[in-house]
Amino acid sequence: MPRRKTIHTCETCGKEFFASERLPPEPPRRFCSHRCSEVQIPLLERFLEHVSPEPNTGCWIWTGALNHGDHGYGVTNRSGERQMVYAHRAAWELFRGPIPEGLAVLHNCPYGDLRCCVNPDHLFLGTLGDNNRDTIRKGRNIRGEASHLARLTSTEVLEIRRCHADGEMIFSLARRFGVSHAHIGRIVTRQKWKHLD
Image (cartoon, rainbow, N blue to C red; front, side):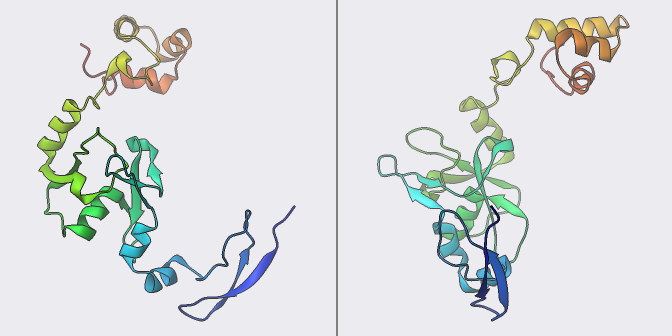
């Protein structure tokens, strides 16, 4: 069943615009575009709309969009920009000031590492080297078959490389091991499973 469209008036520019009724019913749309909403709603207020404090840990849980490609870090955008930034970096900028060039914002939650935490008291600045060491210390750099996403074992990867070196074609190896030919290509060129010789 198609949704009914209603006419709204933008609170910023006064332009009339159509918007579909939402299910479940929500308050009426106030702005015709994201840009107009940014004029009326300050960045801090928009940011805090997506924060849910966790009373037991002190973490501020980001309830907005998550970047699943980076394992659940929150993402948001700054006023007037379309490019997304990590929510914990935005939190640092809002509450602590600019991030010096070349530094990363790292998590230091007292009750365990929580990537969607944006509490500025649980964040600290560090170099990219500090970030890499922190990642290793927290066990985030899981490689090979220890990863829950791994579809092959170390033994199979070494077998794939040996067979390819002996002349077996990538498509044949892909069929035999049940993975894509692109995945086999990345294994034999050592773009994947780099830690194995």
